[in-house]
Each structure stands twice: as C-alpha cells, then as structure tokens.
Image (cartoon, rainbow, N blue to C red; front, side, top):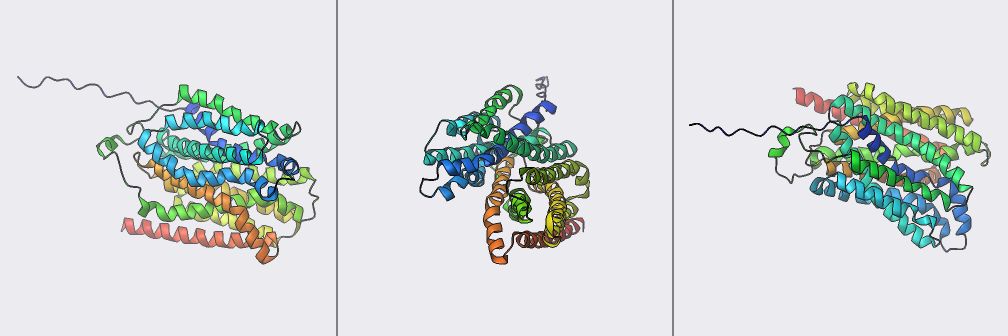
Amino acid sequence: MGDTTIAPPPTAQRRAGVWQAVLLLAGSCMPVLGSVLITPILPQLSEHFGDTPGAEVLVPMIVAIPALMIALFAPFAGQIVDRLGRKTLLVVAMFAYAIVGTAPAWLEALPAILLSRVLVGVCEAAIMTVCTTLIVDYFHEERRRNRYLGLQTVVTTLAATAFIAIGGALGVGGWHTPFWVYAVSILIGALMVISLWEPTAAEAGEPEARDRPAKVRIPWARIGVPLLVTLFGGFTFYVIVLEVSYLVVGTGVAADDTATIGGVAAIASLATAIGGLSFAKLSKLGHGVLLPLAFGLQAVGMLVIWIVPGLPGIGVGAVIASFGSGVLLPSLLTWVVAAAHFADRGRVTGWWTSAFFLGQFLTPILVAVLAAGLGALPAAVGVVGIVALLVGAAVGFALRKASAAVAA
C-alpha cells in the first residue's frame, strides 16, 4: 500500500488592515515626539539651569541627544529584530519609552535629565526600526507598501506640528509638564500587544524564505551607497525644518512674532505632508526619476530662499523644498528597505534609520559651519541646495545606468 499520510493544511496567513497601519504609524510618531515636544520650553530650561556650568550647551542637547542615540543604536535594534523577532522588542520599547520619557517630569538635576534623554533615544531607535520593518512586512504588496510608507511621512510631519503646539500649551504650566505627554506610548503599546503579531516569512510575502539559512549577511554591496545618500537626505530633509524660524527672523520679523514664524513653519510642514501623500502615485516613476526629482525640488526651494530677498522668498522657497522633502523620505526608504529580504529586513531598516537620523543630528552643526563660512544663513541654505542638485543628478544617472545594464 502506498503512503496515505495526509499533509497538514497550510497555516492561515493573517492579513494586516487599517488598524494595524494606524498603530504602526502612531508608533512612528514617537521619535518625532522626542525631538519636537520640548522645543517650546527650551527658554524655560535655559533660565532654570542658567547657573549650571555648561548649560548653554547641555540644555540644547536635551533635544539633540535622542536623534544621536537613534543613529547609534538603530543598527543594534535591527540585529535584535532579525534574531529575536519584531513584536516583543516593539512592545518593550514602547513601555520603556513612557518611563524614561516622563522621567524629567519629576527630575531636577540636569545630568539626570540628560541621561533620561539618552535612554529615550535608545527606545526610539527600537520603535522606529520595528515600526518601519513591520510596515514593509505587513503591507508587502507594492501599492499598499508605498501608500503606508508615504503616510508615515505625512503622519509624522503633521504630528511634529501638533506636538510643538501641545508642548507650547503645556509649557505654560511649567517646564516639567510637557514631559507627561510621553505617557501616551503606554496606551499605544497596550493596543499593540492586542492587535499586532509576529509575522512569518510567508506572511511577509516570502514563502521561499523558510529554505534560507537563519543567518544571512547584510547586503552591503547593494545598500552601502544608498545609505550614504540617505545620510545626506536626512541632512537636507531637516535643513528647512530646523532653520526656517531663523530664516524668517533674518528677514526682519521680530523674534517674538510667533504668528508669522509659526505660520511659515506650518505651511512648510503642510507642504512636506502633501509631498508624502503624493508619493504613492509618483512611485510608479521609479527611483531613477523620483530621487533626482525630490532632490531637485529641494534644490530649487533652497535656491529661491538664497536668491529671492525677504519673507516672500523664504515662504515660497520653504514650500517648494518641503514638498521635495516629503517625496524624498519615502523614496529613500523604499529604495533601501523594500528590496530587503525578510531575514535581513530588520538590520537593513536599522542601518537606514541610523543613517537618516545621523543626518538629522548633523544638520544644525553643518549649517552653522556653512553659515559662518559664507557669512549668511540664506547663502548656506543655497549651497546645500546646489549640492542636493548634484547628488540627485548623480543618483539618477547611476540608477538609470544600472537599470540599462540589467536590461542589456
């Protein structure tokens, strides 16, 4: 008699929907929360710690340190993701984030606050890496993936604007108060426990991945140059975000005219969100067109800021450059991360996150050096635009050449 063993039925694959996307997008907002929520209370912090030695450097580091920690620790988070899984790391990081994020609400010593901010950055490295990895895992079909990666830019950009307003409003009650907002990660984390799951390779669109060895090498040959471009893209992305208020004040607007300054910043933020929304439709152009287009729009906007005098030049240039930034971020992300396999996606995402946030951390430093050397902030922004144009052209040429070589 022949073998009558009946094979077990295949395991039903879970399919993510809008609710899972909402949670992952909400989680992606945590690094933004860390960097912008407390910017409105920096003057209060500077006044409170004015007698502390080195306060003029240490107080701004309360905002800057988390981005540096993301850059340093995201690759390690990626290692954990690929070896131990996605969901556990994400949930642990979300609850830890609430603890270390709210710590300054009852701390008084500046060194202790700075230590808590280091730990906030470590948590953010894990949260951002896992959320991005799970978006690609859950929504691996190209159309859905591009939609949600574009929405990641939109949601985080709009969240930044909202968090600045919330931080300013709560800051009226004292500099301790805004830090309680970090507790929101407890609610999001609890919902993640219930609604998210650890995906299998098959659920991530790779049924053949179970035949691969558990340990695979990071494809440095493929991602090395894209990571360098991402580092530069992180820098150009944050030039307008971080410098627009100083550019507006440089036109003669009073530093306490928050309505004008905030209005220009809000319009630029909205342009970034619209760029992110446009990505899903523009993605059909391919990276060989989309990346040069995004860098080119940034360049045009920055050159307008440099060349056109006064507030109109700042406003129009910021909108053009910010729209380009909104297109750029998901373009870089899909270029590097989407092509990664399930077995190495966490590490590749971690390195991408590290490169992008390192660019963010370097932005104020590099712009300050350029502005000092050129004698004016608008000139520094214009030079960044010229370099962005050259980088975009080089990337487009290289990608089209590679595509032609594959087709040949």
